[in-house]
Image (cartoon, rainbow, N blue to C red; front, side):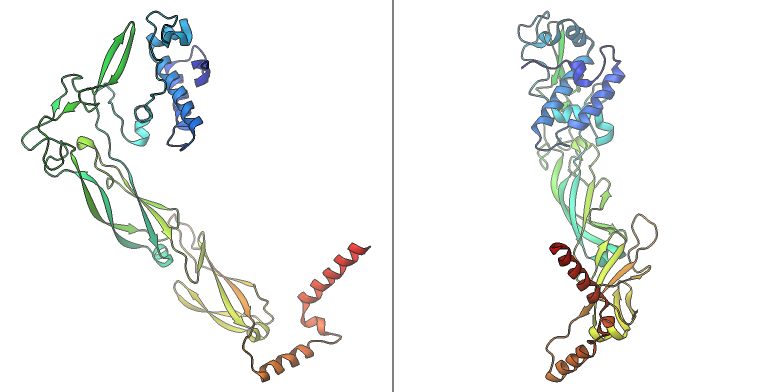
Length: 385
């Protein structure tokens, strides 16, 4: 299958500057990187294609060969002088390396410094899922957590070498972590086969960490939860992730918040919702009902002739967001409760009430029923007309 033109892949003109090439590559690599498109083979293929185009067009010798011979310059037996066997930057593309090189300032760490020397890899970020009650989330609290992670070896202090010795500069790559191989007029940079990209070798490894510079440990941390957090919020603890390689900075720990369901309240942003049952008599005659809030009990005045489902807003009884702003409200929904397990006398009284609400002016006691049945009658009349 023929390859697309590299300039077309990056969406640039043939006279594009190195800055234009890097800008185009950065945009497309961010879009198609496998970490942002998990399980998407199409995106992975596009990322490899974009990476290959960028590597060719930013190398003066390779760009000159490509401009003259096209893709044939990099194919076995191709038309370019000293054709490059196997294709350049094909199926073996290293996503992690190129991502670190170009976006190290964003994602923290790369494999090589600006001068081509080795730079140790920053430690990995960690995630901890924390469940909170609604009260803990609204008021804030301090929680103790245990996190299994990699920490710097206390014996060798991250060097990986036995006490009294030091890692030695790799004699093959001289500390660069990579070596250059020349094929014809092409120069290819590869990971050093001696130190495997580390830039140094350890002849006498530390007994405690076996030369890794890091050991497995469970850390106990106290996490301060700010008031007003909600499900989906996360708290970053800088430097509490995995220790970096060979003394590099540690990653961060992200505490992901999940607020458990509450027996009474339901949170919606900064507002709280709850349902309060009232009796049939209170709904008809009015009265006061006790309403729970996160600050204690308050009395709500119920007007007479209250219908089930009516909402009341209690201002300032909600949540104050961790992001600031006005405090939310408590929305109270009144639900008229139908009496159950009635005695014979209670049933008799209800029948008397029901009978007293009938008659010529009975509809005035049931405005919703009157409107509903008028609508039903009109609906069937329209069907038969």
